[in-house]
Image 1 (tube, rainbow, N blue to C red):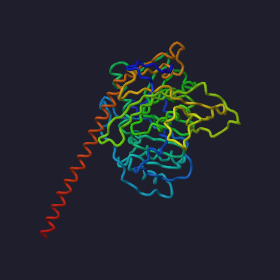
Image 2: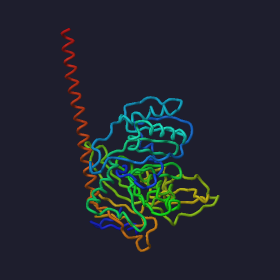
Image 3: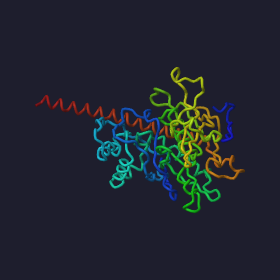
Length: 427
């Protein structure tokens, strides 16, 4: 088992939303993105064309409802879009706002905008803040990959981490909020700035250091130490790529990415839970090194690391367990960085562990040497699965209610048509 994590085994098997509290005193982290956008786009997508590439966006602080008001998150997933209008040929703030309106009205789940310039994005954001959609905007997921901006409504799975932490807080088994001159704050889905682009995670934890506000250490407060991603409707390949991007494109400033991969049986109606897997991703610090011009390649592009005998053209490959990138640091030098999946545990249908530890070196950037590999806090498998199973139950109830509503609407329509036919016969 990796030294980065300890777990109590149950069987002899081998190991295989936004913030509801805000960031409070934490400096507002910048922008967001959800990668592999093509995997998320379906018939609900809206596409708009512009002219120049997007760089970064300023941050808007994350808000949501009080967690005590709803322990297990929203009950109903937002409806799919029915709007299929062609995008305008000339881009402007007004045109993009028109495309975003179905999101604001909860008539669409996703809007995709290609080729947005930084100036145009700032103008859009200013328009939203000054208008009456600012509150809605803060609850949305704002994702960016390459030159594509994607705005979409969070699904029920994105509340899983918040609900787990609520249970842990109630049982007083949550993370230590103080360590030396540092404290831990919830960042929720506050945007994480990448070397190129940004992304809003499902949840995040920030170390906030006290001290001179002009100190470079204080600026580290704007980057989370731990990021959580839940693949509820997302593919394993996609969420693994996201984990690699968090590590590589922050230069390893994100210390740990926790991925919860929730899979359902394909084609099952009603939907049936198939498996739940928990994994940790970290930087392989031994691979961090400057590179010469001879190794010069595309910068800030994350690539999957594969064995030499693997061939994408001949087989369908499993999700990669490592990603690398060449990044440019503040000294102007280019460095190689590698993100790896350090451990994976199956939690369902058979739990391989009773609990999963998060270490002090995951939560804090500079722990004492004697504390670095010591568990700071632990997630209990029973807590994780109780939340996921409750989410499944709530979603099933919601799906059943929508199906019954459709049946009721059809029956009402049939009666209405019968009445009109009868009246038409009398006239």
